Amino acid sequence: MLRFFAGVAACFLFMTGAFLIWQSRAESGPNLPEAPPARSAGLFGSSAPLKAPEASAKTREEKRFSRYDKNKDGKVQADEYLAARQRNFEKLDADHNAALSFAEYAVKGIEKFNAAGGRKGWLSPAEFVATAPPPPKRKACSCGRAEPATATVADNNDD
Image: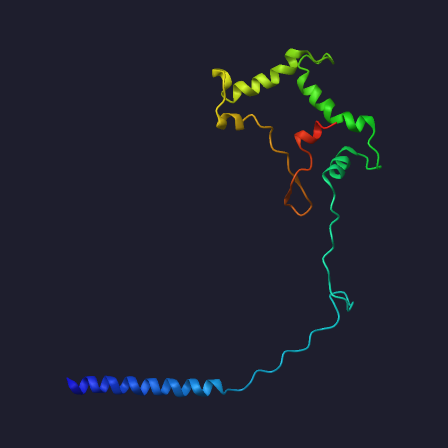
C-alpha cells in the first residue's frame, strides 16, 4: 500500500514539474506584432475626428409655442391658439348649441369622480389617482420607436 501512495506522489510531482516547465516556456514565447497605426482619414475622408451633432435645447415655452404654431410661420394666429380650446369646448357641449351651461361644464367632473369610486361621497388615494388626466398620446417616429408626446393637457389649457 505504501508503494501505491509513493507512486501517486511521484506522479503528482512529475506532473507539477512538467506544468511549471511548460508555463516558463510559454512566457518567453514570440512577441506579438505591433498594432497598425490609426488611420488619419475619418469615415468620409476628412481628417477631423467625428463629433455628435448638438441638439438645440428648447425651453418649455419654445416647445409650447411650436406646438401651437401649426403652419410653422413663426407666428401663432388666433385660430391656431384657440383650436385646442375649441376641441375641449366641443367635447363638453353635449347638446351642441354652441353654449356651455354649468350643468354641461360640471357633468364631466362629476362623471369622472363617480367613475373613480366617488359614489360613496369620497375618494381614497388609489381612487383619486384614477381621476388624473390620461397620459399624452405617443407618436411614432420614422424609426418605428414611440416618441414622447409633446402636448400635455396642462399645456393645451395654458393662456
